[in-house]
Image (cartoon, rainbow, N blue to C red; front, side, top):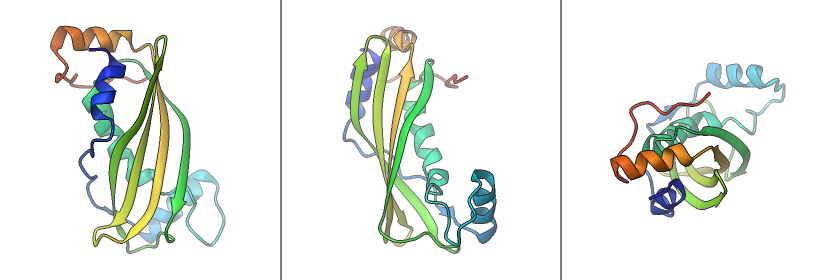
Amino acid sequence: MDLEDYLKVLLGEPLPDTDPYPVTRVGLEEFAAAVGHTGPLPPMTFPIVVCQEAFEEVRRRIGSTGVILHRGQSFRYERPIHAGDTLVASPVVTDVKQVMQTVTFTVRMDIRTVDGAPVAVATSMLAIIGSRSVAAAFSTAGANATMATPVTP
């Protein structure tokens, strides 16, 4: 089973929710400073902080040894994020394609409060370059195997 096939097994299957992420005023300010944001509302890209755990879950499941590149990101909001929110993301792989040794995939993350109120939808497009080593690992270890520590330069 090659990487594209393995990702297609994940296609449409909900992955575990991220751990609850408490949003603090300090956390919002630090993120804003890090990205050079000066507006009164949190930066539009703040939900990426909540999504990081979801990315790591996908990486753990595919055991990637290729270089993972972030190809794009979009956010659609239901409401602004506020200090005091506690957020979770529900990730799902929504698209998988392979061209030669590059596998691209899309992960949609529905972000909501722990009470279930929708906040935003984050969509991330990622690419894995040089995935043949991953395909070899799966054919040797079996499709359900994962590597202990994915390597990303």
